[in-house]
Length: 378
Ligand SMILES: *Cc1c(COP(=O)(O)O)cnc(C)c1O
Image 1 (tube, helix red, strand yellow):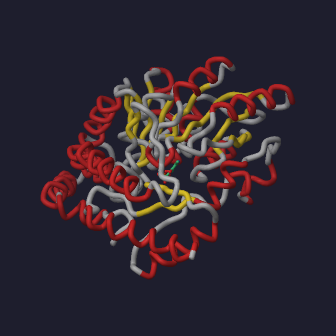
Image 2 (cartoon, rainbow, N blue to C red; image 1 turned 180 degrees about the vertical axis):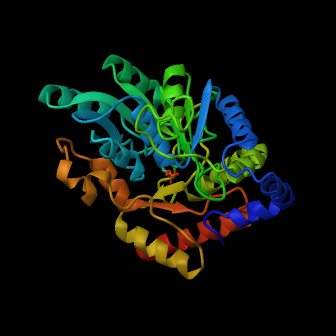
């Protein structure tokens, strides 16, 4: 059994994907060109925003957004304590300070209440200027944007949506990657919409930011890449990746539907044994991960071992909160506690989740979890 079965997905769509790659090889245009332009148009339309700018990966996408906003020294950027390292890494990379914010137990996403507390405390202290919040669509579920947008407006800070895991999800029919002033995603192979290498994209309705990002991603280009008007980076999506993504986009919604069906099946079996994921009303998750919580680390470790013995792969996203990462210790701004994040780090476990899992697989996995829990209790 695979944790995320990229091979089954490929074999199911082999002819069209092979042909798409072949046509790039025959064109011999490996950087830029028609497929990249087409993909950007298709993605902007899919999300429902004016501009989509592709780039080399999801981390660059976040960094480019912060660069376009001119965020730097003495600026505070609010980031969930429970996320992948990139979300906070880019803040330090542009010399600003990441301020970690606790999450909601039900959704694993940033707590709007803790966000407001963190902003107030930074303002009170008066050393840093609150500039932006990065809300993450963790495990596929869009963050609490109704509440977070209001707070961003109230304190006049910018909202960046890190939709690396959320692409394809929605709130009341409005798609993920449309909620930030700028939003970003990743096409890393295991993300909801993955390519066959690294890739990323940036979404915004703002013309000026879009133009700045187009420049920053190609060596700070002016008229062309040999006219350099600012210090930028080299962050482009390969043509082959764009061609693969154009094909995968055609069956993306079907896969999300399948994942939602699988998630419902998982939860039906598991809800009396462990804490199952809670998806808000009128919200659709793209199920980057299906993550349960055990009562404690001991129960979790026992379950991992039992499942591994039966060749069922699992993963812990994430074992360590951001505020405990060594890389952030020198500049740690620590005036909050992170009770929920720390508890979730000790108890969470992600199960196999992809559109090619069968109902038999789910039955098999959930039975093994039940066995593990029963035997640890007894
Ligand atoms: C994967 C991920 C990223 C980074 O994407 P890459 O394409 O790997 O650089 C950023 N944020 C979150 C929440 C992610 O899961």
